[in-house]
Image (cartoon, rainbow, N blue to C red; front, side):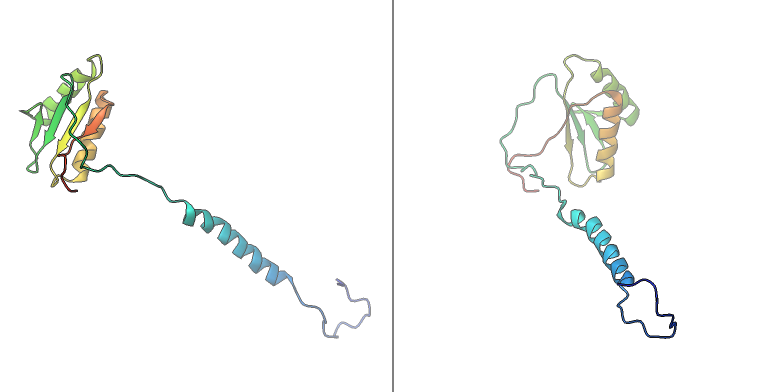
Length: 139
């Protein structure tokens, strides 16, 4: 493969294939496939819990926080406001051993409200959070 024209004839047709554009296209395709291939095979494998498990008996130190579809919040069966709930979470975080906060949430409650309750519990120091469902209930 000659890179220069030694014959001196500048107007003669070039008898070689220009490979540079084809190499550029192949490198771009290689980069595209290198980026997209891991994304296609990187699936998170989860085994989601089933609600048909046997009922667990709550321990005496565990705390039940219930949320109704209407927005009512109940701390161990007693209705509480948002301010009182924060204070009760703070007090519960000081107990040793650390109690488990068991969330009983109605199906109609939006996920955003559940997420904010979990974030508030974590902010106050309650790191052990469990979700409670009825045994045998279909999701």
